[in-house]
Length: 178
Image 1 (cartoon, helix red, strand yellow):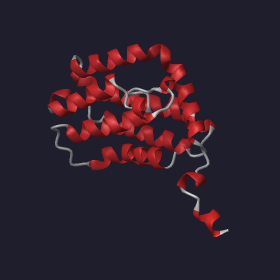
Image 2 (cartoon, one colour):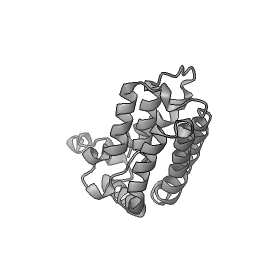
Image 3 (cartoon, one colour):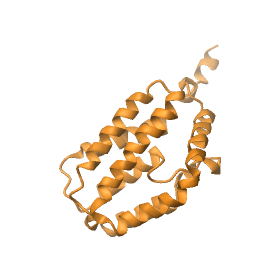
Image 4 (tube, helix red, strand yellow):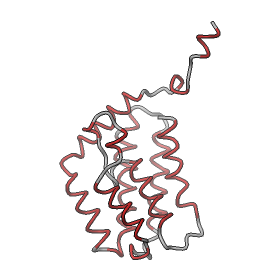
């Protein structure tokens, strides 16, 4: 009897299986697949050519994920999706107020990492199914990590670390609890 109880791990207590999350990401990715090329081009164009609106663009991406991913997809399987919808929208507002800074404030490592997130989605290395690959701006994990990297690697003087709290919470939630 005791051997049976000791054989449990954290995944045994999670109500959503990895297969369910993978199916959800596949359906979400499939619904967005016609727009992948457009997202890659807009991510690059806005970062390098329209530098003054970059943070506004990131704010729109956070809002899109808040409404489309959390409200229309994750809410089907997770009772706390509404909380994440609100948190991601709050993050969109926080990022929106960075609109005064441009991408000129990023150092070269931040630019290289941004290009990595835009052109090579790291979910390619995490997912078993290659159909559910999500890019920066559409995948909540990719956008959260990309935003943390861009905020931390920028040359801006960020005195308020509240900008990385919500993305860090999501990264923790997705890696350890989903």
